[in-house]
Image (cartoon, rainbow, N blue to C red; front, top):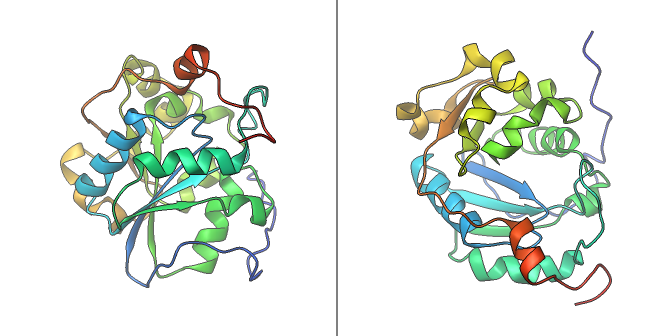
Length: 217
């Protein structure tokens, strides 16, 4: 039996998102970005072009429920750093999850679909996230909410494609050649997007040069 996604503040005017218009194709790329790096930029720019999107929303989350919050920089500090990589008028930086009051992707995506039913959203995540997708809260509901573009990452392709979630959703996978029309497809639907790979990772960067902890800038 499928559990319902808990209701969020769908009508609350205090939840402010970037401007979007009916019919637009918008990629939502969520994460803590602690810190952001060139690999994130490469993924965002490739998704924008290959998926034929009008915008990419860099959704900076308050924290990852599956990871320790130790060493997590302040939300404001991470947003400032993201601005270095999210350049161009079609790259939007947002942290509306804080006002929405959820840290879970299922609630966030459900909110977006209810508030903007005429916008064609695509959820963008890395191959490393697909590898652990079956551990996410209401992951099957996420797959039914909007199309998913899985961006390849160094060393993660095999683990991602053999993961429980990828196997469960195998029949809904599209060939990469159909990336440009992914936003038009009815979920559940997903594909793996091959991009120029970057060996950078937020974990490695934190270990090399730790960021200020939460509450500092």
